Length: 422
Image (cartoon, rainbow, N blue to C red; front, side, top):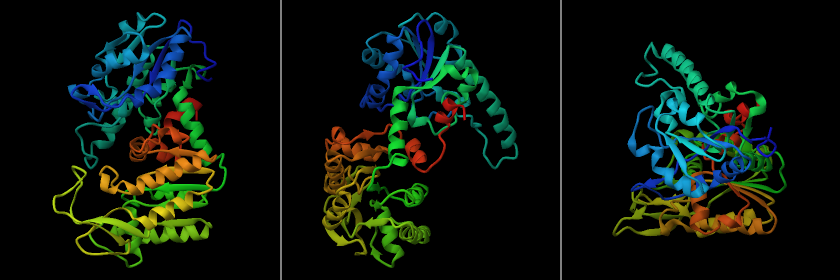
């Protein structure tokens, strides 16, 4: 069943959304996630249904933390939906409010992660403790009861939180067990995400170029290995550049490096060669003698200079792709028909080190204008395209970080499997 086919008239829909929005001084600083869910929520209301909205915020780890209460977003959600939103401060005691909902009315539940049952992880006990396995078993049973309680408030469940689809939580997967199959479905945002991933991984138009950035090879190795069986070109940039340089005996100064992953880097190069994939690595880097990673700024008196990526002097830290690398990356993206970008080329938060990521963003936008399908995923990559004003010049910006990466890695996402009954 799809949300467009379902008859919501007179029915209550409990919808899992991702309203984990950034809040500063009690105000939402970025409405992207709320805006992304609006088409689904409005469609249900337009079809004569009532809404019970559930989400998490932050990582309270099973404890009530006022600074992470969803009560802070009630007014913003009301304004966005164009209708008053009621609030329930206890997810397990929403029976009366849910039962009283009339068509067109909306109820927002408190932060799901105030309850350890949502994630299904034992709280206050170490994994090494002999009693951990029993505690985990008991928590899984409690998780089912929590999911059953949430399900009892509604006639159908809509999964529209791609950002948490890779987690088998009470609200993202387990809840499906308490509805008939015809009463569970993906929301419009989830459908778009699934289609976008499918375009990149299954419905590939070639040449297919993937750009993997970020600081560590280790956090991306599963994705890289999966992509090497699919792409024509793979651009590797960001901090992982220096692990590859070091693997070949290069000098990388004070740049970030994973010394225990040098063999992994060499293995990636070998696998790329075996698969006929053109591996594109940066040749030069913009380096600095004093960068503050906490404030994303250059310290007073620090110097900035370009070095070959395999000949960086001691005391210098590689922080962005140099001019030769930027040209090389842009050249690799020319003529691409499918593009995946995850991870920046450097410390783009600081103006001095934005050129690498900007060059990639502009090359992706150019290829998109020439007919490529471009998928941007991961918080930093999304932040890049927004910062450079390129959001409307790429094909699709994913709302999921970890979920997108696991999908690219070829893993089954529990939130999608639950809807499909897998």
